[in-house]
Amino acid sequence: MPTECIPYKETNYFTELILDYLAEKEELKTFYNRFPDLENFKAQIEEKSSFPIKTREILVKSLKEQYSGLEVSEATQRNIDALAKEKTFTVVTGHQLNLFTGPLYFLYKIVSTINLTRKLKEKYPKNNFVPVYWMATEDHDFEEINFFNLNGKKFQWANAPKNAENDAVGNLSTDGLEDVFKLFSAEIGGGKDADYLKQLFEKSYLKHDNLAEATLYLANELFKEEGLVILDAQQKELKKLFIPYAENELVEQISHKTITQTAEKLNELGYNVQVNPREINLFYLSDGLRERIIERDGEYFVHETEIQWSKNEILEELKEFPERFSPNVMLRPLYQEVILPNLCYIGGGGEIAYWLELKEYFKAENVVFPVLLLRNSALIQSAKLDEKRKKLNISNKELFLKQHELINRKVRQISNIDIDFSEQKEHLVEQFQQMYELAEKTDKSFLGAVKAQEVKQLKGLDNLEKRLLKAQKRKLEDEVSRIAELQNELFPNNGLQERQTNFSEIYAEYGPELISVLLKELDPLQAEFKILTFGKE
Image: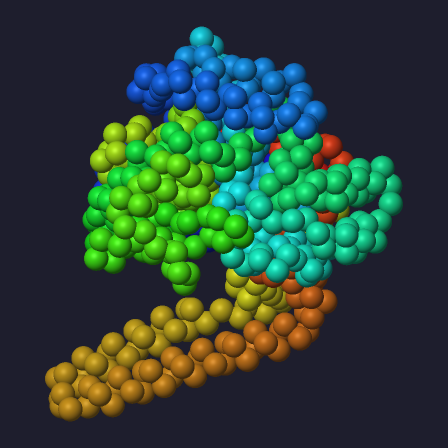
């Protein structure tokens, strides 16, 4: 399969913080534990080796309960059983419960995670490494997850449960998804692979009662042969393990103190902080409600409700009902590392950015901070589109330019006249330099007039260049149209394909080859953007 790699820096889609992290800039090294290269995992394994056996037992028991109604592959069962052993460690990625996986990068996250465990096994054969997908069942950002895009159309869960905006999304009933299924079935068409996708949607969402069960089934079907272990951490026995840390959060508010200081340091270095902590970073989760906990004058309240406790009362509530205390985005990473023998978290740029705020908080809570790895990113194109690109003489790197920049560049290249006034502008500036010198020697009050004339003439050249370029675009209208059409197809809504397009659009055309190619081509330790070309010309 033809592939090409492009440095992240040259895609123009990644923040300075992430680029500097990948470049191992000295000023960022205090914000993470170890950089993600294979050699550094030796020390990470040693540091995480003290993970409690009792916690492993509780984790394995919880996973077996979650998988009790599913067809569990030998590979996944082997990985679940292995988690009870001291020499087994996890690599984790987390993701929201997006409808039918949401954008393509859901697959990239999981493939990155699976592939890293394989690389670690090769490097450290005496240990076992388990890929884990952490389902964000306790989130309540329903608007972010209730749709997916297919063939340029938005398929949305319109008839959602009434409490969808307030409850943890994993608890939501799958009622109302029959309508989405009908529309999806009509759009995806026929054929073996399309029929598989229809069955997958139907079995996931119409045969399961809530979104957590549906997503567990869906992800298991896609990746069970790779040994992926899927975890829903919204369980009482797992939450019990987090009680001491939740108590610290309620009483000491350690996360707010430590993370705020780290965020200030990142701001001082010129980076925009991804997430700001609250004083208490816990939600209360009960009876269709997920709302934040607030402390005022020693009393505790659930925001916009009449629920309140004294300090002793809320600590009793925590001990009796730990499952009702839900970590927010700042505490979820700590919860994850408390209940999993984890070495590495794999996430997108936004996730890595807020993880970089957390190291001091982990230190304060005496929890090992994981290695942070940016997930793979890719652009998938057909051989047919690739051929169009070549005929238009556009490099893969140029595809990442803003559309007006790409069109202007190509119009200049294919035009039979040179519409670039850079040389004339340089010549003009040189001429005016002589006038400045003349004014300086004769009457300095003329310097302003010379400057005004220079600005006016440079602006005139700019306008003339733009008008000529516009006229040439009209003459080359067909080429311009084909350039725009190509880029729009590969970058829907002027954004990265992986953030827009659902996997079903590509699976319907290439079938299981999609996942097998991703597993073969995406190297989690190769920090470059990959372009994958499918099919025959």
